[in-house]
Amino acid sequence: MLPVLQWPEDGNNLRNPRQMSLSCLGGAFLFMAEMKNKLLLLFLLFCVACSDMGTNPKEEEIPETVSYKNDIQPLLNSGCVNCHGNQGQLSLATYAKTMKGGKSGKVVIPKNSAGSLLIKKLKGEASGQRMPPKPQSPWADIKIELVTKWINAGAEDN
Ligand code: HEC
Image (tube, rainbow, N blue to C red; front, side, top):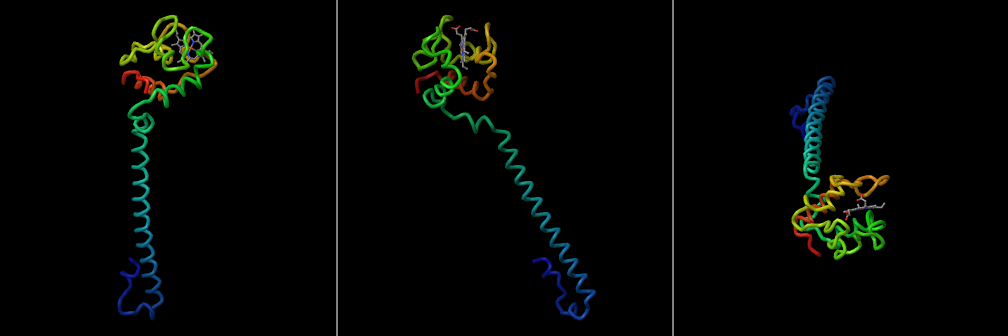
């Protein structure tokens, strides 16, 4: 492309090696410069794409409609049901049991995540231990947000 356009048209360059190598160098330089710009552009596009992903992690990971069956129960099964199964006071093993609550009464208040003991325990904002208890690590924010969204959408058996 560019090197060809820069080439002297009379063909003199073939008889003058010095001029030829100079225009070759110039052409190569322009070519490199153009490639560099393209690479830079590609790199910038890449950065924009990446930063876009970085600004919307929640939208990517939290579904529009959170499902109890597909999203919430599997979380409770993997982190809570070994203690809150059938043996103790509060069972989180099924939708009905989760809604029934424990010794403190209901742990899920539909459309009121801030007033739901389940969320307060997950965040460590209620009395007693933060759930799940040590040495297990607290849940990642994204998991708590998933449960929060489900409760605020009405805590349905969906
Ligand atoms: C290692 C066993 C264990 C695990 C795992 C566990 N809990 Fe608990 N949970 C307890 C104990 C013991 C209590 C009662 C003492 C307290 O409240 O600190 C309790 C209390 C609670 C309460 C209050 C119940 C009431 O009626 O007062 C809630 C809500 C709760 N847990 C939610 C959870 C959730 C959600 C998980 C999963 C992230 C979980 N727990 C994991 C042992 C556990």
